[in-house]
Image 1 (cartoon, rainbow, N blue to C red):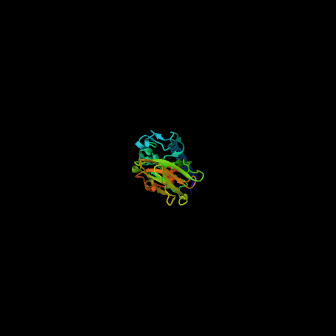
Image 2 (cartoon, rainbow, N blue to C red):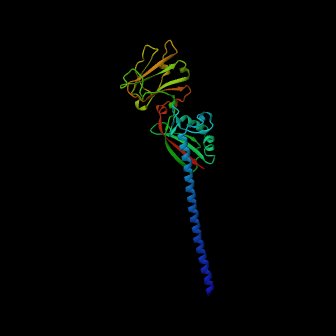
Image 3 (tube, rainbow, N blue to C red):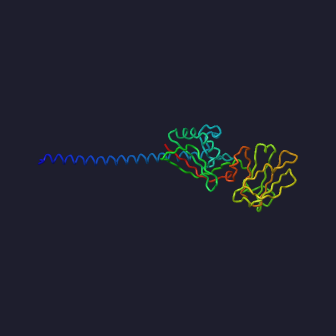
Length: 287
């Protein structure tokens, strides 16, 4: 039979085991809590960082002003208008594309000190235009992201006239849309001129073209296409320049007149690419 001392030893051993189990459970719980706190703090720090970066990008044009042409300096995506004013919460498409061409140096190294990997995606809203993504595609399972609503201009810099705006013409503005522009014969050697029509008005509009140098006026034509090439419709008479008048048979027509370089991507000759769009800018980051 086990004496009293033996029973006491067993009881002490059992108590010790129980205490160890309790301590282990407490320690595990503490470690889990600590890890959750660290993870939450890390997530908060990351979200704060990328939020600050994306807000700075869409509200500053960058330093110097031509950083996107020389691929040096601090990038900024904000649009600067003709008066030199910065448009807040905006993305200049030429700057966005330039950033993509030297993304690692200008973004990951310059702004994030090579500590994390990132990508930027510009997604037009209420438009048939596809989204454009720049940066790394090698995302991890743990990705942080922030979104901002912005104005994006795509190829608006090539717009010569927007017929939705008030035109300058001798026709009745309440019934028609019209405007004019000056063109030189030399322009046709390096520039292609187009009328780009919104899909909603294709087949519904009629247009005619006339110039100050030509006595006759071209007949009314139906906009059978959303992209109308104009170079072969512009006539010159005994001079090297002409004022070209374009008329539409409806007011505030959703049409833009553009002049693009000869090597311009024809797949981008769509109305939506040449107007200001509402877009979503998404910055993703991961370790």
